[in-house]
Length: 308
Image (cartoon, rainbow, N blue to C red; front, side, top):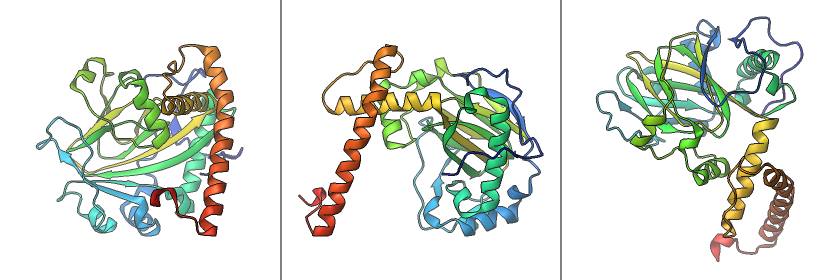
């Protein structure tokens, strides 16, 4: 996780928000970016990044194509025995989907790019100015005609198209059951079960060409279909004070369900949500104590719970 953007910011507008200044919407919207010609997204520079980031942070998966799509939009098999640079070089001949995690940690140029981009966002979006957290950026590299799995992110984000073009189909968060959202928040696992019925509620598909971006609302599931050529996309995700409050309510609801309680959904009763936010501090203290006890037991040679 990086610190919040500095006051100086960037001289170039990396993202053109043009927001009226209200809260972030619950529906996607399209805007423009200036990343298509940015040197950090040139082929050789991406290869350098792939070499700098530890292999465990480069996610590579098999992917269906437009010609082989079975309509399930399931996540492809994880490929752990392939070389990232070789995979990137051969995206045209072998359908693959790549996701680079932690780039801002292992390459300071990408950390600075992220800072500059966030400065552009905070200049225009009032909801971000009180403070943002859980900041990160992720680079997607994928073959032409790829059909990317149906999933939801554990944050809200801006997806920026840099190279190639694609169509993004976004669905309201409400299509997911409340328990599914709670599980997403708790586990951070993005893959979700796709149901054909969701199409009735989908937002209008958004086509992205190089230099175009789309806002992906908090927890809103989505899927992507690439056009003919290789795609390079860059996603910037974050939480605001407002979205952190919602995240906290979902986490408490998850804990209550484990106790056999059926909690009221988020935003159903505002007073109850406020009480849950207060409850979360106690849960964090409990988890911290448990962690300390496990650590002490481990050092003293006690068997772990998994060994019982």
